[in-house]
Amino acid sequence: MSSRVFPGHTAHPPTPVHADVVGTHNASPAQALAAVRRRPSREQGMALETLGHAIEYLVDTYITAAPQLVLEADNPDQQAVQLLMRLNRAVFFECAAVKPWTTRLMQRLHLRH
Image (cartoon, rainbow, N blue to C red; front, side, top):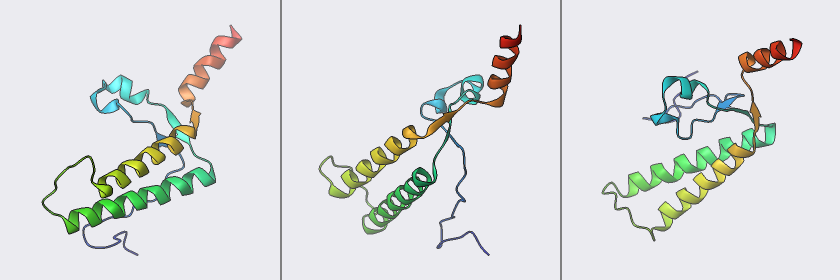
């Protein structure tokens, strides 16, 4: 079975743990590795997946319909994408944060001394 949804697009399987990479593109490697990981509930995972598909659909439709991209603040398509992206981030940040196993181990070792 191919992972291609339609020409030019690839489906990615959902992962149970998502890294919080907001702002890590300019971070040092050590800071990027220290990114907060989040574990969504079943409902949050489904919401993230649905919002992601909706965002991708609107962007693809907009690019296909208007190849000469004109970014305007009052463009309803652009406003819809921005709204969905805000909702996506809101759901993402509501997911439970997960500490790396190394941090948990170090905390346990410190408690024993």
